Amino acid sequence: MRQKLFHKKFPKPVSAVILAASPFLALWLQQWISFDPWRMYPSMLAVNAVLFYTFYFAAAFLIGSFRAGFIICHLITLLVGMVNYFVMDFRGSPIVPWDLYSIRTAVSVAGNYSYTLTPRVIWILLGFALLIILAAFASIRPGKLPVRLAAGILCAAAMIFCGVRLQNEEVRQKLGMDETLFTPKVRCRNNGFIATFVGDLYLIRIEEPDGYSPARAAAVQSELVPGEDQKDAGDQKTAKKAPNIIIVMNEAFADLSVLGDLPVSEDAMPYFHSLMESGDYTAGHLMVSVKGGNTANTEYEFLSGDTMAFLPDGSVPYQQYVHDAVPGIVSVLNEQGYEATAIHPYLASGWERDRVYSLFGFKDFLDIGDFYDPILMRGYVSDQSAFEKITETYEKNRADGPQFIFEVTMQNHGGYSKESPGFSASIDLVGAGEATNTRAAEKYLTLIRASDDAFEKLTAYFAEQEDPTIVVMFGDHEPSDYITHVVERITGYDPEVSLEERQRSYLVPYVVWNNFGMKADPSMDLCSVNYLSAWITREAGLKTSPYQDFLLKMREEVPVICAGCWIDSGGSMHQITDAGEGRAGEFLHAYRILQYNHLTDYKHRDEALFSAAASPEGAREE
Image 1 (tube, helix red, strand yellow):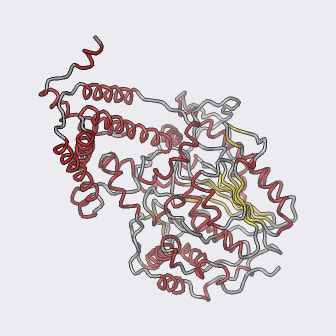
Image 2: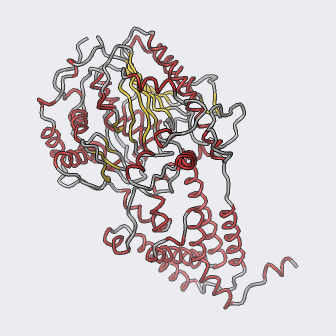
Image 3: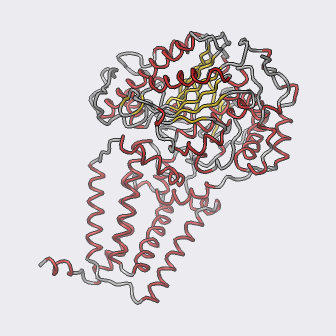
């Protein structure tokens, strides 16, 4: 009986209707998993349909079976849609082509998240199950081998042709494709997820700036930062010798109050706020380029001085572009006798740090294997244990000269809604209701409080040391949307109202603590990460590279630049596609040229631009 049922097929007319409708229905269902398919632009619906039909029929003809081909395509379509659904749930933005480079990192942390399905997604899963069942009973065959091979190759060629044409700017404009990069969810809704992904493939290439040449890179730096404008750092500082520089880039460390007035039972970062409000330390907010994930991009901006503003949306330089030595703060400090150590209390392979850190110039890299019996929170090494590794490293290496220690923490990593034995929220959102994301937000705030306590202990330790020391802590990004949605629900904050409102979701707090009376710089109240390492180098009384001199000069005209916007000296915010006018425009274009020479054209890099040895005298004499 089972055998007869399995071999029973639909009549050919019915099978033809099923096969004709299935790719379009699969397209609609996949789009519906994460976006509203009814709001797709008609022209882009047609483009997505072409991609789906050519994909389905190419597979069927080349495999030699409509049943097998369509079932395989249904499963692939469903898998891609579900992966995108969970990625959006965790980090708030859809999959982009460069995420393929991040699979190893994603797999390493996947077990720390909770996976939930909405009723709508369950209905969509049932819809795909129905499509698979219908395909299994189709009776039409693709034909003889020569015919089906020719048809399969033709369909595959049509699919590739369509994908290639989407890389053409003129074609995208004629199709009316939404190309607003800073709203990726809206783009996928308007363009369709698959067409957006395929259309973004062209962004893998970094276009050469107008007028670029290695010689021009040196010229623009000297034109905008003449020798007499380079500041003599040694005349400004108060430490008697080169200070230790400790940098903590704290995972998802953010102050949600920048989005609205939250009714919390207690302050989640009382010590940090006290430092920010004291006026004794340089402190404020950094505008970063990422939210909810892609930690490595904030890391890259700090270590290199480059900006994500000039790189393809969604890209990760560590994985795509860092193929050779990257001069930056590490190499500049190495030239001046520093011992450089990187610390990350998780897998060294994450974001390929095991490969990349040596290219930045770190002498040592301590990963999870170097932590012995640490205190854990939700399965991650706590900030308390992470910071104890900093003091342990300092004690071990202090006799070797000034220390540069750069740590990226893990305690506050995503997965806040997942139940973790031994961990519960101690901070309440008063009157916020019992929603799942409310409980997750309360756990997040509790983690931030633990970071605050640990940071206070870290600075207390260095306050007792005689060696001059600078300790900087900043967040890499705000948490995922399912945490910030709590703020939106409570306060009415709407990131889609304007560019200015959207960019509030990209603010993280920072403070520059020190134990030797370094003066606070009020102009750093709002900054972007790409400037911070150059500023620290100068404020430490050290030589800066010509590239760092350029960044410090540019900050006077463009105090903030990140993937989402840039801000001029008058405080006006501009779309990142705005080329700017006057001095701001000059610096923006020059920055593109210098960064291209620094990162992309590294085989013709003007090394003198990125070396402290090229700077005029002015470093501290010990």
